[in-house]
Length: 188
Image (cartoon, rainbow, N blue to C red):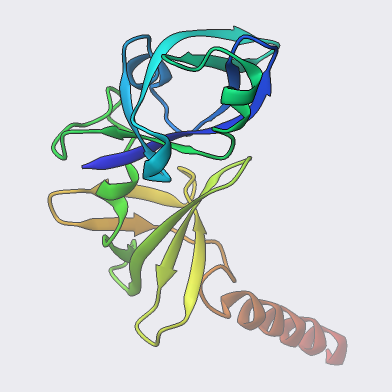
């Protein structure tokens, strides 16, 4: 199975280094010297990592055969893709690869069907499950422990405890109920 592990950014300096937007929780495993990575577009690769270092909080990589700024600039926006055993699991038991989560059924803690995960959206502050509901609509579920209370890969299920309003109109119902209680209090 192939996983996108990084995106090449702009050139850094004049010796062929590039900045890299890391898209893996295991950069030391996937982006170390000697790693051979497929690319998208395929015409720019495969690329072999010659060296890497962190500079001002950014990962910089140099690839074999790329020794100047012009060569580095030609790689900009290229996706780096690693071959991964589909049965491989991250070291932390609470971490998952995207391919393990796609197509999981999503249910609430009481067993109510919500839908199926069709995509994982990686945002700067948190990841989101894009869940397709049975009616074809989509709902976005933050992948945080307060909401996603369980992942069972064997049962192909993600269990969530959504706050009011995340997947339905419970927030509107609750506010209408609260408003009704206030009105009843005014009449007394």
